[in-house]
Amino acid sequence: MSRLLIEIQSVCEINKVPFKYALAIGLVESELKHHWENGSVKISPKGAVGIFQVMPASATNYNLYDRSENIEAGIKIIAWLLGRYKNKWEAVEAYGCGRAGRLKYRISARNYRRKVSVTYVMMRKTGRLWSIYSRKALPLL
Image (cartoon, rainbow, N blue to C red):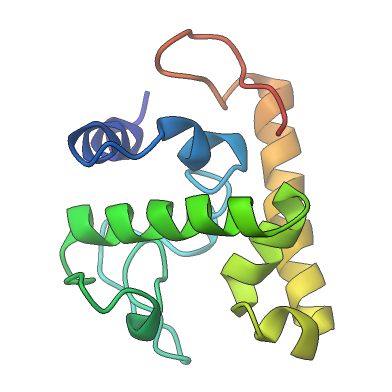
């Protein structure tokens, strides 16, 4: 298991965030694969910060330059989006392009969704997407 997954698990446990949200939609490794390099804090051209590429306006109570707080903010946003949208892929689009951007930038949102879903499916097929608790592949939401 990667160090990043272990760190994400500990942040989830400390903050009582359901770990299943972090894994079940593939936003731990499949989404992070598109953003994270060598643990550096990245800032996107649009201003999203850290390994979860969180917009500062979406997480005003967090220090997004701190890895643990960035992870916590990202996972809480994912959990909220999962509750708001009909399915996990709409939530992925909203995470990648923003809630309003999902409709405004439909092509960009679909491209982001495709990247995450392709990586997610490949990881499930190769057995790389595992539940830390059960050691079994997580079911699709």
